[in-house]
Image (cartoon, rainbow, N blue to C red; front, side):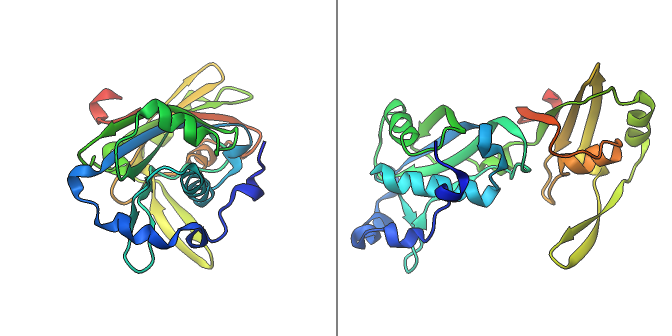
Length: 239
């Protein structure tokens, strides 16, 4: 197994060959667009969003697949990820888009890429199309987080949170702190025995961090919880 510290890409530009620029001028009708659904498990749940970008970048570079690059003077792999998942969460609903300069069977692409991915990343599905797809972030409108707690959360506390029209918290990023209303990102919270189901919305201005919501519920522990994201929604009406 490969440790996280060893799968961070260093300087991927050094791995790009001198004739990479040729891929920048491939006609649109020859390109094949791929969307991968993958699971984030085991030690990889502690990898950051940037770590994942580096992991997939390195895997694509090492795969030998005819990947498409973007940017004429500083070419980078044409790769895009879904919404960032907080560290410490298991998920089977993570997505990544990339483009190849020609069509390859999805089964072959899965086999090739799996060789260069750590065990905590498992490819679940891969689709291909000859037309560019709507971005993942624009397509997914909500996700359900399942949280296994040590004891049930009081229903009264859940109802109180859902009754508010605003729930302002302070977010700190570096040396800056800003006030954010996260109520508009909380669609619903349900409790069954010791299992919480928290439905969070993705909006143009962002979303709520699952740990911010747990903090409001009085659950302060962070890494001793079992949290999964195994359900996503493409329409609010489906929640």
